[in-house]
Image 1: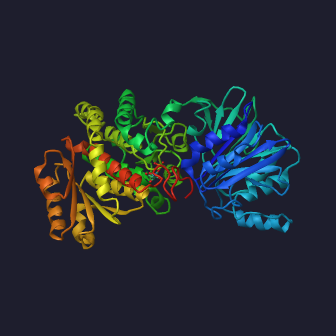
Image 2: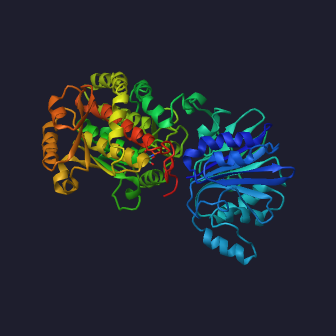
Image 3: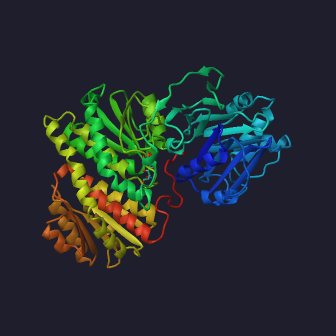
Length: 592
Ligand code: AGP
């Protein structure tokens, strides 16, 4: 998923664009580029690879332009190379476009345009936008965009400018995120808030089908019919510091260490609203949780707690599977859509389709003003602050805090249980205090090619999440599995070379997990035990052991996930990998 940015103001646009692109880089890092209106013409510079390549090639160039657009790419159509990098221009070179998303009918449009004699330079879907706007351009960029948009099918956000009107940028949102940033004598457009946080905290999130005409002293928003829309400006509670590394080597490490505060702030935010859901959770026939990736793992854990305390059926589905499966849905169902970004296409469109079929939709998001926030019936927020590392960490534990609060919201022991939850940050700090020990252990396993993660009951979703963290940042193949399922197949994988991380807090399934460990040891497997500090039995059965403080059964996941995040982090860092921007990944997945 690409990152796009636009600036019109009084300062050198290239500086604003490059700073913004660096903050958008976690959205895609195959290539980057900018376009500026320089001396009455469009100036384009684009480079393959990271933003630093673009900065290097722009270094020393006397660029005075105060209007420009920029792009960082996650390639979908056309391999990562300079010709396919954005911005893309029309044949005159005087109209430039940056785009995030997919134009699904680009082949058909391309053929029509080629039949009119238009020559294409790239293999991208995006280039059709530049040529279409050029085709309709008669001196008014907004008008040309209004005529172009109805031709496009797919999900997209794009910004366009022309040297013929060097004072405006037109932006369009349809499916992919685009926010307006309001400044003094300057205004901004960007795919997300952290990109413009250094310049303003006053934003207007655009909704699907909205078109913005951005100038130095005005921001006009229209629907696709050309009707003016008046929108509220919201002030985001994040500050620039929260989007910096704060002295840590990587954002991911910083965000792992921010978890006690993120969970603490989220619990406070939740308790302060005093569980004020505008409906009774127990009035629904079923709760269906929809999510992807790490958010799915949080949902799976939430379903265990909700099953325990709410005593109503709770199902969890991968949103991408729910989307095209014939799952019966009605107004007796409550859907909880979990997404830190609030923009993941699979989760968004699944929630929308459930809503269209009558379900009530709660969204649980970390980004205020995101699509899911605006499109759901009710929103619960995590208060984790911006998460820049592609691998989700602090948003995961913050999601767990809200899901646990929801689960116990009807329990007669609610206050006692929430009190226990509020004591968590202190125990999480204690686990973080073991980071150096976990680092040593991680380096021992850094050269392994495979790894198994096992857990039962509440530790099963943690096994899944631990394996995902290792996969996505160290590129080591890892599988999370219910420990009880091992003997039904995966046990065939066990030999001396296969390390097995076993999450075994002393809970209702502890004895069962010990038996599963016996099965592994019988096949000479290597066990890394993760359990309560003083657990002599588990220590005795493990080749290596990670200890965590004793804690109430329900809450062990908040502690056991931290060593697994650190384990994956230290292995990836040791292997010299790009921890914050792992290959082939992007922070927000806005295409299906
Ligand atoms: C997790 O580390 C990954 N970044 C990814 O699996 C992520 O959880 C998934 O894409 C869902 O993102 P969301 O929470 O923003 O919807």
